Length: 374
Image 1: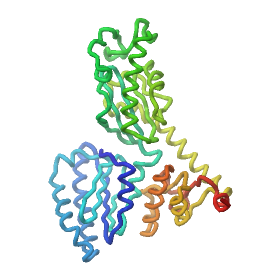
Image 2: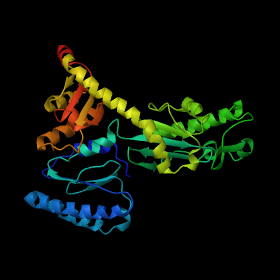
Image 3: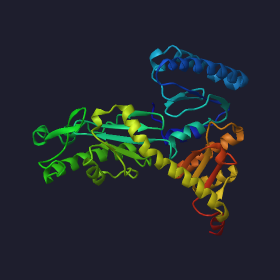
Image 4: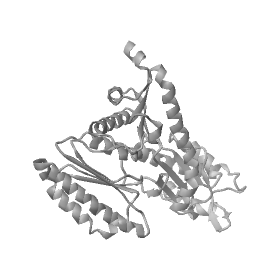
């Protein structure tokens, strides 16, 4: 999986031209199904060639880029390491591509703007979460979705307690005991098991503060939920050190060193899913209640205007798999609404198509009547 950020979305949204090509394909991660990745890509390149021909002289700038895309077909190793979807953008000069952890439909467009709605599921408030696995031996950070999880590698994140505190003699002062039926694992504790003495508790707290600083630098102002994975008595100490604004109250309890990425995902998603569902359902209920108060709107022109003024608190958009594909005008307006909402610190949720009667809906920070009276 490649790291797609809000700044990437804004950069793409702000680019305009006579012809910009966007293409998406669903991809497979493992098994015999990965053979489909290259086939789907080859098929969509046929659509790209058709779009270029239809664009006439404006499409000539893509000829060199199209040749480069054809070379990707021969990259066996790359096709074996895909995520759930592939997004590619051509502007005639640069090619941007991301392997993304969300399922996307096959899409190929050539417009004066990039088609971005499928990517918004990566940046919305119910699209992704983080998982931090911590033991004395290692620190691992993961980014997950409903269907997948992948390990991240922030440079500032300490490898373990030894590297974080720059000490070599701490092991002799830490006892070890069994934490699972599968074997033994090193644990932080003093002379009384979880009854940590002051020195060891302070040592662990300093360790977690190192981790907190690395997370703060790497995640910035992110609001995606963070799940902690570690032995039970470490979690309260981590909560004391952690300044991240969306650390969940439930954790994956146990030594994470014994778990691979898939096992961590299966244990963490049940913790995250209720959090996402509550936020999404709450947003839908708030929109239904906001209409009579002048704070709920579903006209795209009005939504874009409100988002431009920083007035949109929450934007609801139909799932990209909806049966009805937005027309060109709607797609451009959706791009603008999403980007302007995110830029102003608003939230974006993708909801099932049947939940909205129109392509998008917005909850405003203050009512239309209130705003007009200011």
